[in-house]
Every structure is written in structure tokens, then in C-alpha cells.
Image 1 (cartoon, rainbow, N blue to C red):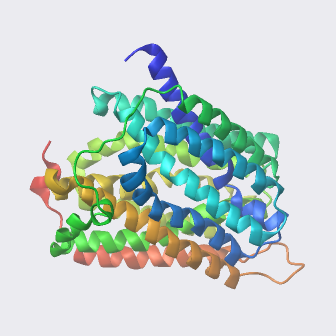
Image 2: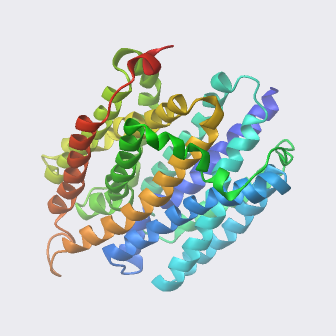
Image 3: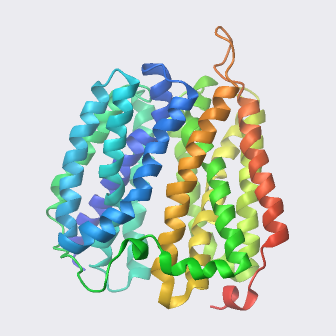
Length: 402
């Protein structure tokens, strides 16, 4: 691969995640402070992205991948998205904002798969080359968070203008990417796109337990995405978005640990460690504060690498190994649809309802009883842990080979 091509792909990956990170992390804070939204409305707003994630495989699998060059669809979606982001910045009514956010999410969600499609088509050794390009996506998310905190625009409409600028640039850059023509081989169907062929895996009790655990653990995940930034800001912590980027740094570092952990412990232990990390994280959040408990908050943020990588990333590896070559793609499509689509959709609404339940009277020092809020997802994760410990059976030979 030429240096020019690698640079363009890396830039596109950087802008892809910069655009997302520029608005997603601090959306809850923006809605609370600028639109006077309730916690239920914040959860509902985040649910839009889950709706889009559930529908995205249908668009990509049945339309984009079949009839249009991926780089052109990528460019058009990001240019249209930039316009919607500007409209979001100017929306002063929650109802209009919600519908615009749904429209934007429907435009953005397919671009993640399309970005990967364009990139993978150019690689000779994906296992070695892709991480070197994908890491720029993590860098984009981190830098977006650092800029939000440094510029002090976490709750300002300026964050949407920043995201719009990045989206517009990416839209133009996309048209310079290598031609990635549609793949019309095979028989695409709605069932295959959503992973129908992988339903046979439910005959294995351990896979069923893993599947249901993945759905359930999306509820604690939704609490973090929707309310971690408002929580830190409510405590009066400065540059909350910047401090939260420590979670992405942790995520990057623990990705490097996973191959060694697989060989040393096996899949069951790794997944259990991921669930335990969710419990510990929320207990730390429940008892942390902006003074003597600041260290607890930092540790809770840094646990993101174990929380996310050891359960969700390792879970993808587990699905890959259990499914085998014949239904690998179908199985990954099924678990992605279930978690980022259905699981996060349910989690977004539940997190909003629970947080609203712990709202404090007007005039209180803080907006919510955050200790009560965080102990709920900790309890949910604890229930998942017990069920998983009792029901999941490791497959040492398959999981530890290689």
C-alpha cells in the first residue's frame, strides 16, 4: 500500500470517529443545559442511535453494498450529515431536535460499516494492517473529547458545528478514496443480513447464555454513554469530556492485552472479568466525588478498557470461533444487531427512566442522586455475573488453541 493511500485511509478513519465523538459523549449534558430535557428524554435521544444501528445492516447489506460504490455512499452520507448537524445546533425545541437526531443517526450509522468496507478492500494482510489504520479512529475520538473540554463547549451548540465541519471534510475526503464497487455476488436477503443462519447457535446453551448476557450488559453500558458526562459535570468537575478520554486510552491499551489473556485464561474468565469491571466501575462512581473521591472517579473511567474490551470485543472473538467459517458473518451480524441495536435501545430507555427516578428537588446541590443512579447498573451487572457464572460453560480446547 502506498504512503498516500495509507494517509488518506487513516485520515478518513480519524474523521469518522472524530465526528462521532464530537457530539455523542456530551449529548446528555447539552440536552440538560440547553434544551431543559429530562433524564427520560436524554435516554430517548440516545436510543435514536440504537434504532439507526439496528437498521444500518439492512441499508448496507441490501442497498449500499449491492448497488453503489462504497466510497461514494460514504461521501454523500457524510455531506448530508454535516447539514443535519448544523440544523441540530440551531434547534431550540426538544421535539424537533429528537427527529433531527434520528435522521442524523440514520445517516451516520451505516458509514462505520462502509468505512471498514473501503479500508479492508485495500489491505493484503488485514490482521497486520487494519489495526494500524483503525487506531487513528481511536485517536480521533480522543482528540474530539480533549477539544470539547479545552474549548469549554461540552454544553454549547458549537460542538455540533465542530462535528459538522469534520463530517463535511470527511465527505469530501471520501470521494478521493479508492473505488470500492458494489459486491453483487451471492443472494442477499433480509434474513441473511440480520443473521438468520446463525440461529442454529442457540442450540448451544453457552451461546444462548452469552447472547442474553450481552443484551443485559448493554443496560449498564447505556448508563455510561448517556449519563457519565452529565454526572461529572453535575459534580462540578472541569474538563469532564477531556478526562473521559482516559477511557478510550484504556480501551486501546487493553486491546493489546486480549491475545495474551485468551491464551492464559480462556474466554469464560475474560468475560467474567469484563462483567466484574462493570460492577466495580459503578460502585466507584457511586462513592466518588470531586474532592477526596476524585481518584475513585478516575479509576472508574480507566476501567472502560476492561469493561468494553474484555466483554464486547472478546465476545466478538468468541462468536467468531463458535460460529466457524460457514456462518461467521451471519453470527457477527446477529450479535451486532442484538447488542448495538436491540440491547442499547432497551438500555437507553431504562437508563433514562432510572435516572429520572433519582431526580432531586429543585434547589438541591446536584440535579440527581447519583449514588442511587449508579448502584442500579451495578446491581444489574451483578445479576448478569451470577447467571453467567452458573450457566456458561467454557470450551477450553476451541478457545485456547492458537
